[in-house]
Image 1 (tube, one colour):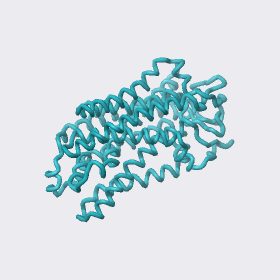
Image 2: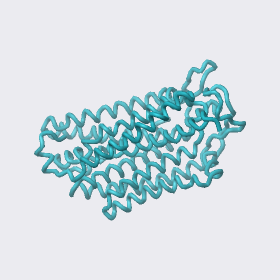
Image 3: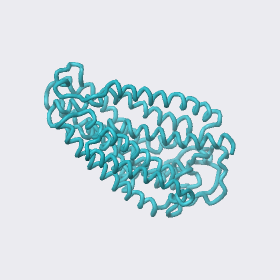
Image 4: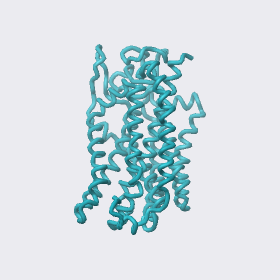
Length: 379
């Protein structure tokens, strides 16, 4: 197999790794934001919840950069087309996330109930909306997206952004994402919080894990009965990286299950997702949040890699012209580009993981309400 094809496959796997890192780390912070008004009944309790993730939330945003950068560098055609197709959705995501750092910095600057309650709602919106959009994006690409290219390579959008947000399957995927985010955020509040935050977060994390598992399984049955995409002519993985020429593609009901039939080992991925989600819920129920956090991470990894395994090699299928669907083969950058990017990814991704781990180790321990309310430097 030629090196160019190998690099394409490696970057498809790395993209899944980076998207999983984004989901686990950023999703944890978003989950705390979504839970803030429910786990904290007093101002001191809410400030405590914020200070639990306060030292880490901005550092965790690096996973957004890694995920977006990986798409930009490794699959430039996918980056350009997806950011165009989902432009309005991206703007919604951007504005919801802009509220987040502002809320962190300004919430405690004015000591009035209405002021702080307003920013508490901002935390909820900026926590829940991005995770719903994140999951809905996966739901959209699984179903296919309305776009095509002209003879000159110009992109044309053929579907309203409203449908991207509001179609039933995308909503289901968005709720799975939100559930896993709340599970991860609730687990972190258990690890570093005390009663009564601990007990409220425990109930939320257990419930979210169960809901996420049920919705994930429903989504699996749904995918098995919707039209997926399949090649109907020979495929050349080393073909030129352009969607204008290539093999023909057809919509086939159940096509997203073909890879599982061809490679039964792939069933380990959805099993990993279910075990991770349910395992985290069970461990939280017996008050083992430190282990539950890792099971929750496995739940995210299983869910994201299940999607990737189902669709491979498709990245963003086109409902308008299936033969112009973006795949690992036709949307990748050059061999030179992929090779150098792989080198930097192998250097900096472990460095980021090590640094993040060190930060969590240094800032371990319980965050107490009485310490937060008397510390002028706390959030």
